[in-house]
Image (cartoon, rainbow over all chains, first blue to last red; front, side, top):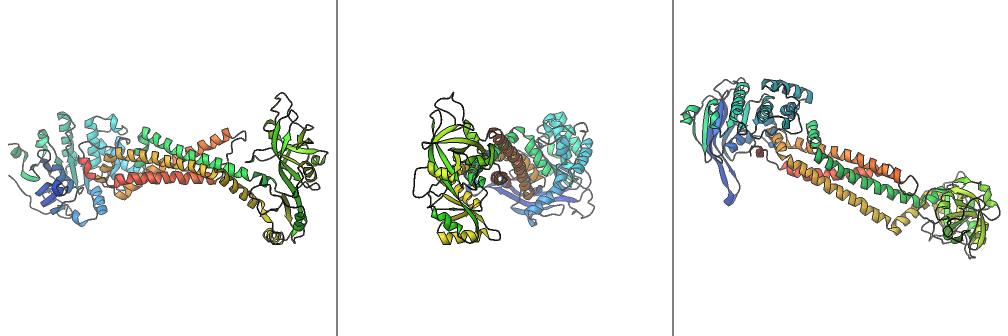
Length: 249
Length: 383
């Protein structure tokens, strides 16, 4: 099985194969004393630009913790972590939050759309967070929504959309500000098989480019085939990593 | 993101309306009670303000309120007139007496006796008759509103109401109504009947001391404060300007009647209820939107900006609640107070107080809610 990538990321124009994420010996625990739980037990992982990496494994194995650490939402305890050459440990909370806003896009399992905003406004949120004017942000969001096939749903509220449509809005939201890393948590678990495949095709087609990386946490073995590589986790460690066909075996 | 914050707030209509209602209620309670309080306070000094011709009021030092009948000897009038800087000084009698109406109704009244020559201290406006009519034989003036109030016939309800020409007894002395006057509504409710000073002395029971007030005009070119001090030092009497005496009476009424503490409690209750309701609702709103806030934090919204969003939400709700509450209080006061019965006076300070109260409610609500938002881990979006 393949275990590692090797070329470091260049600072200007990353090329497919260069490293976007580099983790070595990353640990993370929750709780204290007798309640202390080790969620990550020394994870080594490399994700290249242009790569779609899937993290799979049983519930509680540490997948979500790992993407939270990679996305800078959780702080690691030990180990090395570089995301596009950036080390969160050297950043204050505010700088880290701002960096995350500019460089990472999120697709959540429960979509997490704001119920009182229209689809286009929801998709525009990351741009507004970055300080772009509402009008400009919504205009760009509409362009992105058109790319994910939702040009007729700009003014719909999330409650007026199907699960698949909501997930496409979430994808538009994750991509609208052109982030380098897109993190998806169980993007198909709330969707039927057909819609789930459509969402993955969309993610791979629209989101994945040479200067980006895509990490998807999933239980859904039906979508493994969309990955470039699949990392299997168990008990806080990556136990195997390789091409989908290898993992499926 | 301010627009997003407002949309989040307004979009959840049920909670938004509940929040607005809570804040409006608090604002209305604060504004209404403060306005009624102000109304009572203004009424307590209304008679003094209505008697605006004099610069200074001279009285016994133990007088604490307008109806505190502690009189002086008549000789004090001459002593006051002799102080340098006094242009003129006129006597005024004020006393509590009993009146009997033609139908036999007995009513406690306040009799005010004005200087016979000048009629200084007369009521501010006449509804019927002229001021000089007070000098007519047995002449008295009664308040137009009292004709249907405390001076209406109550023993024989079919008896005609008092009018010019009607006769009544005051302390068993017959007097005749020669004029109807208008005055500002007062805190004290007994009818005020005006007559001349000399007639008042004939009507009232004989006493050694008959002079309640000396109304003083300060001579041109003299400082009223200096003249007041001169009167004080030369006579040992108390001297106030009109506003000072009105304020003295107002504080006496507010303290002695418990109005200050009672209205203070109601206003405080409005604030506490408003703070609790708005705090609870805003906290619930924030709690129910915690996933949304967590998602926003995960997507790069800093804590500072989240604080701004919650503060904006609290302020928008507060502003709307404040406007509605003060508006409702003003309408209530206008409608319920149109007959002059409700002591309602919304001076500019009242909306300011209500605004500060609502703002404090919002700040408390925001602080409570922020404690929830700021400790929110963005990682919950993955759970």
